[in-house]
Length: 117
Image (cartoon, rainbow, N blue to C red):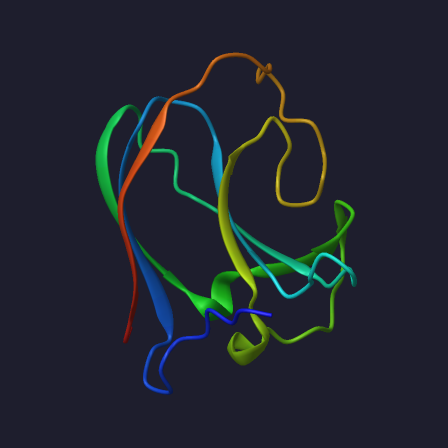
């Protein structure tokens, strides 16, 4: 089972990406193919279309399981097994966002790295 944990000094992820105006979330997971762990979500700032650089502190991620908030959990970076980006019509609490509809979207990830924040 692969781990994607940062060095001890890293406290954030730095993303450089080009996107349209859709809503995107950065997700981290602690599960595997055989055991379901928590997902951790961070909604990227809505900045319009273009190229963006965002530093996301690990403390900014919110725990969820099957789309439901899981308060009281602490993200343990050493347990991370995957990183993902997704486009969403739901907010960080699983509620539909007024005016957002599914459909085509475009995002290009240029770089992703662990950094000290």
